[in-house]
Structure formats: structure tokens, C-alpha cells
Length: 208
Image (cartoon, rainbow, N blue to C red; front, side, top):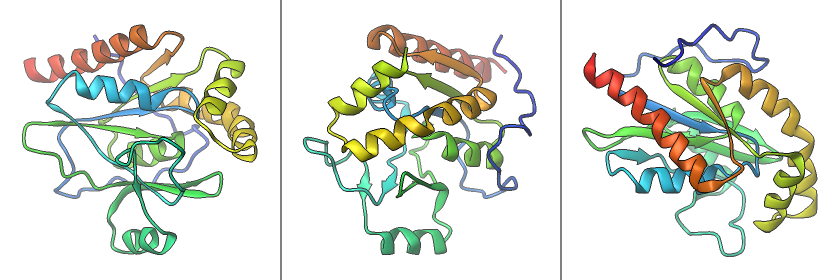
């Protein structure tokens, strides 16, 4: 039986008041963690394995990395991002190491469950609006492994150091928010574990 979420008032990250917007999706799964945890690789495989899972494409003001897929994010200017904020178009947004990241209000196809790949700040905001959402925190097996992954994806030295500096506080806050914590020490095993967690919740909802 999946664990019952306990109140997380001490999470250290402020939450907005719950929203009653009618276009919120029925089921929401949050995959979160510090930079370099491997969230993107995990989520892409999880979503590819099940056509009824729909990945919300996040917006960001950062520039694409070398070799990064064009659809990894919706890359926008700060002006466009701020206009989206003003129009109430984000489910959550946050500034992380100097760049803006946000999740548009999901518009998933009928019959789909929504997956969000977001940082811990964003996860706290979403849980404030959608306390029924389920959060899986993904962590690298060590700080050394996290640093190696950050360097492997082509981030600047300054960005890597800033990411590593905030990683302990992100991890601590994430552990207080999450329903499950998964250590990404082997990609295929981690993908299988995340798929099993999601399937368990979806099965329980379906069986009522």
C-alpha cells in the first residue's frame, strides 16, 4: 500500500495556497531532484514505456546545451517567460542558479496521466496546489557522481559549482516532500523502480 503523505509544513520551501482550477489534470506524478541526479534520462524512458503517461514540457530562459534535444525544454526569452507568469500560465515556476524554469498548466490528452520533471522548488509549489500529486525524489549515489554527470552534460564550471553548492539543501527539502526516494546508481534499475512506483499508484486509483 503506498504511504500516506504526512504534512510537510517544515519543508523549508514556501507553498502557494491550493488551487481549484478546473483544468488541473486528474493524476500527477512529480519526478524531482538536484541537477545531475539523472531525472531527464529516467523520465524520457519512463514516458516512452507507457503511452498513457504525458510529459509536460517545461519552459526555461537558459540557453540550450551543446547537443541537447530541441524539445528538451521550450527555450524562451525572459520577456516571454514573464508574460507567461503574468497571464497565470504556469503551474509552478522558480529561479534556479540565475535562470527561470516553469511548468505550464498541463493540457494533457484525455485519459493520460501527467508526469512533471522539475526541481525541488517547483515540486514544493506543485504540491501546494496539488497535494494529491505523488513525488519521487531522484538522487545521485554520491556527490562525486553528481559532479561527474554535471560535467558530462557540458555545463559551465560556474554552473556546476552553483549546482553542487545548493545540492545539499535541495536534497534535504526534497526528502521532506517526497513520497519515495530513489538512488540513481543504475539507470535501467532506476527506471524499473520508478515505473513500478507509478504503476502501483495508478493501479490503486483504478481499483478504487
